[in-house]
Length: 279
Ligand code: PAF
Image 1 (tube, rainbow, N blue to C red):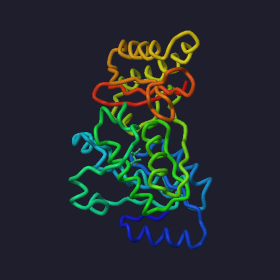
Image 2 (spheres, protein in one colour):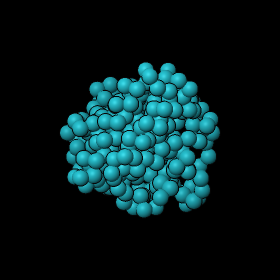
Image 3 (spheres, rainbow, N blue to C red):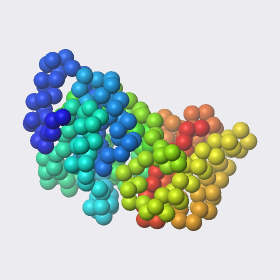
Image 4 (cartoon, rainbow, N blue to C red):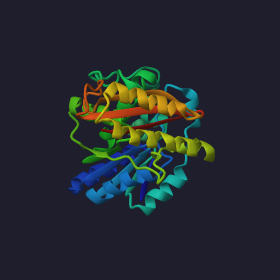
């Protein structure tokens, strides 16, 4: 497995892969890899001649400096893991390799067609500008045939689909299902920040979401939204930031149960967790 820390070396390798007619599967990450990331990388390995992973904690998508500072950085461990699952290269640059001072200090603009006005976009202003900014740059350097994203970050995935369409980027986006612990807890790098007790509490989030599926035959979207919020807030140690049932494509509030997805953000102690469920 090759490690590239600068763009030029990466671009030279990519040019050679393309010259040799190889397909490239790409998984962008911020590191602190877990089984959810591994499932994306394994799929990239299976479906492509070459599989690459970027590990870059992207400063422009954090609207909270403390969150950025606390984000786990575990490059050696991540590299060892990727080696065992057959990744061919890792791209792990520093912020100054990716961004000019001007880019660091200004907001990247993108026409989200309204996808950023709800849920995460509302609670984390500027977050998706940073995501689009970094992913479009990474796609430019890596020129992947296919890129793999987890459905846990559902809004991000919807925005990436729009980004490749609007920017006309020739890459196939592969949506990958949420990977859960046996307990039901959605895997996330943030789970590392949960204590053992908090982890037990956090399990309730997915259980309540699963249970809410049983209500759709008898209750309206609004009723189920309210029910989920109430049930989660009832669990000591959990506080809902939002729960919204939206259309899977437009992310606008769902009018009925066809094509609906419920997206939740919950604080478990100080840790912000997200999850979702398709109805
Ligand atoms: O989902 C993530 O880990 C990040 O948002 C991504 C796509 C790697 C961009 O920094």
